Amino acid sequence: MPDLTLTAQPPLGGFSHDFGGAKLAEIADHALVSIATPNGGEKKLAAAIKKSYGCALPRPGQSTLAKDGDTRLLGLQRDQMFAFFAHDGDQALAAVANKLGDAGYYTDQSDSWVMLRLSGELSWTALERICPLDLHPDVFAVGDVARTMMEHIGAVILRDGKTDFVLMSARSSARSFLHAVETSIRNIL
Image (cartoon, rainbow, N blue to C red; front, side):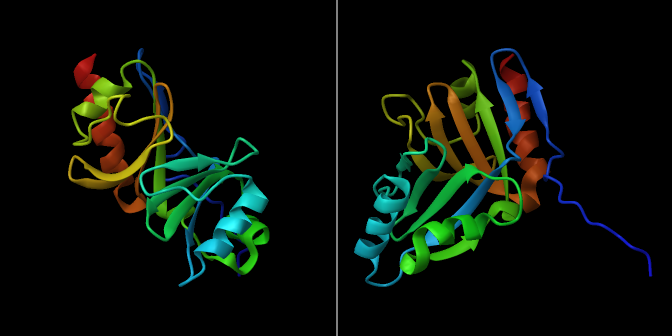
């Protein structure tokens, strides 16, 4: 029997392109772990997050940045959030579970999503063509997060800087999602 070694690959092969005014790049060095609140366990989870991450539970539509400046907790809905953090390897779930213990239920979502970073002064112009949300800085502030659709593809959008957005979609539609965002950028140049 042959000796084979499997190597994990990001869904878009590490795509990165600077369009001038907008840069689009695949995020391949971050993990995404779902954290669900057990029934009646919000206070326990909030205490564990405060102790381990030094931040509060995010409200739906908002995120909180941990004291380490790296982990961002994304409030997606009541009793569910994502932990988004720099991580290389296949032990993302353990990294969260070791910090929070039995205060929540955890699922590693890292390989289920394609994650893109869109940055630059043309970010809003590119996104307004494909995203139905009002992303004006007065409405969608740094740290805000939302589920939405982009070109009929389900997506999560996080604004994590003045002109920086993290865009996430199901891995199964990675190429279509990239095509939609990339086409929108090309159409405004």
